[in-house]
Length: 182
Image (cartoon, rainbow, N blue to C red; front, side, top):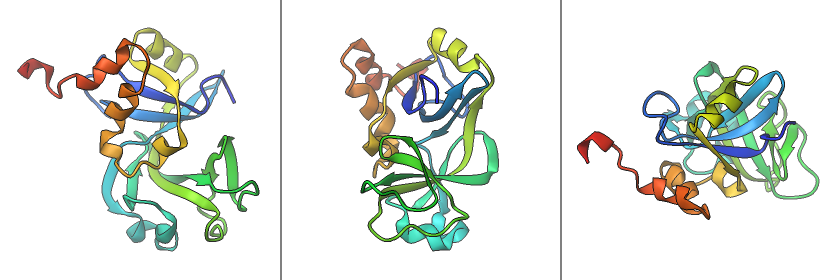
């Protein structure tokens, strides 16, 4: 795992359109070959029950699929936050209590997960691409909190994460949805 693995990428106003507009991305992997993450604040209209019915009872609210990003949108991956020291089978640690959950494996026993999110697709960057985007000011790199990944109000996450920052970037949370109408 690289230096950015386990961090959040928060889209800045430099990104003014497309799939990453006001997105919050959890970085799953970052190394010399590139970066991989999932957008954690884009709930979809699709219910987990419709796609992976056996997992629906384990997913926390909102119980829907999330748009993980523009790559591999026909595949699903899941992030789970474990509750105890002994993780369930099929859970692969990413950072702290956060890890990938094998959706083809056995269902984790009740109470072993504090939260679970299922994502359709993911975000990917080639070698040095993410670093270049960070340098041009498109992304703010901040510490991830477990609660960010399973927030019951993902639609407010972009502003919530910005507001908790210690420096002036917290004021980006007040950036209007349409700056041209200002």
